[in-house]
Amino acid sequence: MKKLLLFLPIILILSCNSEGDNSTIENNCYFTSEIILEEDFNAINTSNYGIIEVELNGDCLEITFGSSGCGTDLWEENLYSTDAFYNVFPLQRDVKMELINDETCLAFFQKTVSFDLTPFQIDGQSDLPLNINGWNEQITYGY
Image 1 (cartoon, helix red, strand yellow):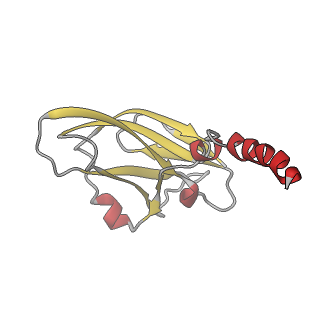
Image 2 (tube, one colour):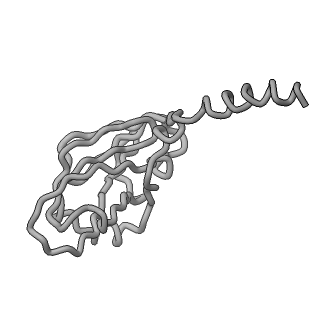
């Protein structure tokens, strides 16, 4: 019994040592991107927000955007592309973020969301140029 009491503090210290290690959480994207049909992609409205910043973080694409509304809690964000490619090599993807925001308040809010880009990867390519609707610079996603 005395040996167990001696080892118990060591076990507690080791188990608490991993608390606060957010490295796995920080490397995960919050939302998943999706490939959809070209006609559905073309129908996505992108006029209800403005992109402020775009940043690649590993397989995650972080988009900071602004829109009017009553707050960001009820917003729904999606990231889409299509398999309709142009005759360019390497193949490129056109990308649209969809913001579903049914609020009619006039306040302006800013939000950053992170999307997993792995569904956008193309076999045989290790770099993928992304043309994000509403962003003037092409982003190259390396994987």
